[in-house]
Length: 344
Image 1 (cartoon, rainbow, N blue to C red):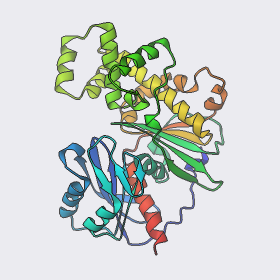
Image 2: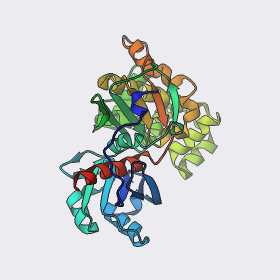
Image 3: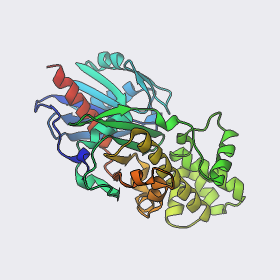
Image 4: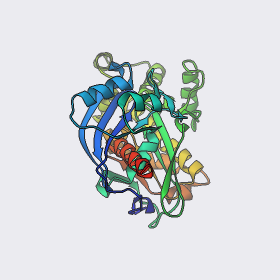
């Protein structure tokens, strides 16, 4: 087991403070109350469709108005770069400012952190049953770690080992340039450049990214059965493509998901090499649990290890999929617990 999953001293106190935690993404907003303790347990959890609301404040007010509980502190993990307590949400037309939220919600303190940073903090609150191992790696894996999460967008973060515990560090690595490996990848990049000024990894490694891959293959192949065209018009295309691929109903969808998994493994390896994550790499986000059968068939790890000069290094790294979809919420609550503890 990685040192990252061993019990660690967090400095959290067992105090009767109530924390409001949020996981803010382009598709949905998850909110929950947590009672502060070393093991944080969510209560009164609710999910809201992000695009049905004009702002995060509207969602939070609705959530609070329907409950008798009152929080003293809040932390929100948000998909986007947080600078000086302000964030423009990447896939939503929202601007969120910590001071404004604090005043509007009448809280003692509000913290905004990147959603992948929240996921990284949340790993501390998980148990071994919350993971599926793709690669065991070395028997004792110690050092820096990393997390990569594909969902509505693509998030990446580092976890830097200080000799005692891991310190999460946010990044916007999902928006680094898409890097093709094969001739087919080069064709895909050329296709994407006709639609995007500068294709990044999120362009292919996300829910919309899976559809971009499919559209490229459809244009290249020139065929699409009528039943699939109908389903793509009536449902969310990434769900349709994933379902058809996992059920082996359409070769084009199978090929699209195969490429998606290849890219997931390749970019996870890129991140692992940049962080030198000898302590492990974690696969988070909403997509991975839904395609776990595909991630565990060997294709992901083949792309992850690759054939480059660092393949032995990569093969020694533990790789685990996070199956708990509340990880970012847990992490936001844990961050608030740590920060509010410093205020006392």
